[in-house]
Image (cartoon, rainbow, N blue to C red; front, top):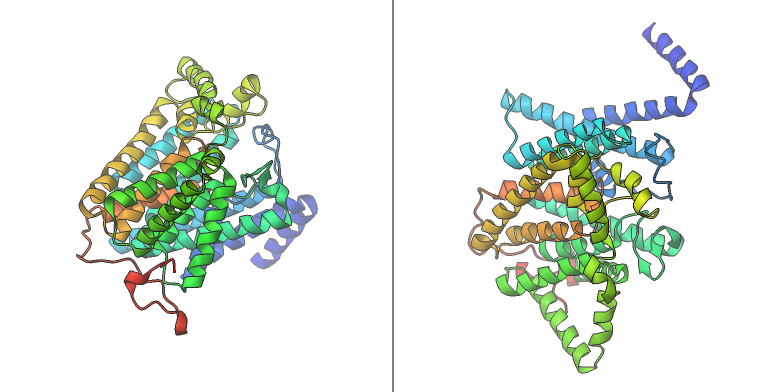
Length: 456
């Protein structure tokens, strides 16, 4: 009898609202699969789906989301983040069952939960409460997903998963540039707006490759290095360049026990020497700087922040103007091309108010302080060095982009790194720990850990 009733309801639903019924059915199937699964493959699919964003794929009116308009991409986003929420629920239930009680979350995640609460409160004043609520929900999933993923798989496997995720994103960007260039190209730049931020993928991917990639053949390493380097160069993204430059400077200062990093620093030094001797260095610098006149205002971002933040302080200082939704409305008065704050910190402050800004500051400052202390004491260790470099890279990218706080590869990387840093806080690497070797099978094998990522 229940099967007959269910079939009847499903039939009526398909006739009345076929798209909605299909979406609900798919959502139910995904939720059930994630709940009952014990497979790392399913976990990996959820990880990759959340890391991807998913891609926006199409150009959309910035006001459409404020009005609650749905299309297939929005439905896809809802399904993906529902799967992430179900995964978090499953892991939370297992954790509580194993511990036979509820434990208080560690301080960075507690601050993250307060951030979610305060961002959610901005729904009360948001011009697009559904959009603000969904963005706050995504942040909640990312905070908890990072915590439970590291708790389940550990630091090393988390960094490996992050690396492979960025490899997939990098390949996706490269394929899109050939098959559908309109998805990733913006004039001379390869921005990747509708797939993933190309500069961020290049910079973070490069750091994960050099610092924490799993064993692989040298030719595979070289191909991935070429992929991330090409994406980084073609992105013409100054914040991504700055993060890699900071990475190189700190690698020179700290000299971590990672052969790939040392080889890469030498390689970059040789390239700079050749460019300097051939008098081509000014051309490269002009490429990196791109538009010297825009540096003073960060491509007109600073005047936009000076316009948006005072409005928040005057109208709604505590809970903000509506997370992620407010810039779309106020941007219409400032410039029709403005859709976001173009800065993660301003996005949180203007959208979620002083309360959200303080919670976000606690997460960032606490993680930065904890990671810096480990960097000073054990920075030659591959894992410690990698976590600190990834955190700095994400924070640098957040200066000129909101990608660090909205659902995106950068945002999930941020919350994963926050969890990794917390997991590393009470651990001390064994003396002489080296990076994992880049090795394979047959004649291409590296002979030991010190040969990881050799540039030969």
